[in-house]
Image (cartoon, rainbow, N blue to C red; front, side):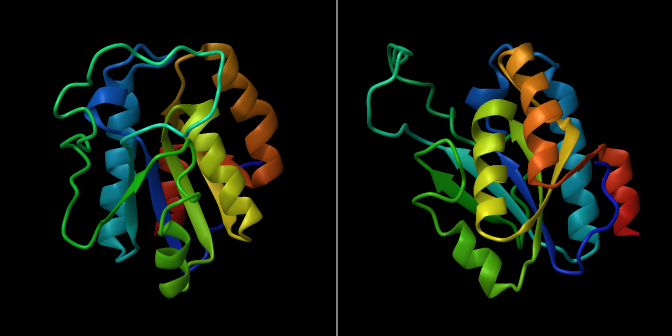
Length: 183
């Protein structure tokens, strides 16, 4: 479903657009995803709406079929890409899980500001973005996912999230359409 409206108390949540993640091979070029997320952040800031920049610095405990990466990540792996800031007034949320809600103070920050809707962008569509959008929906927020501001490491997983999951959680639309709703 295309985005129809943005609540007066809407926040932008940008998931894992950090140096180590954007350097990974993705289904859609990360440079375009970063540019669209930066345009969204600029538009939200211009309207005085909050921007939350989420980064991951670890992994959840537990067994998976995916082997842990070998070696240490680069020292700047978890730094937010410079195109996004952070700028004064932004909130940086550091997570250890896929989603931005579990084990963080994101929900507390949103509720203290009276936020009723989140617009979500970032990498990876089927991992951090989807987990964050699902949790936002479960927490009672209206959810909008910006489809040209998300990508995945796997094209099929990206298509599944955008085509099958996100429409069940809220609305989806493009960067241009979401920015138009802010005016």
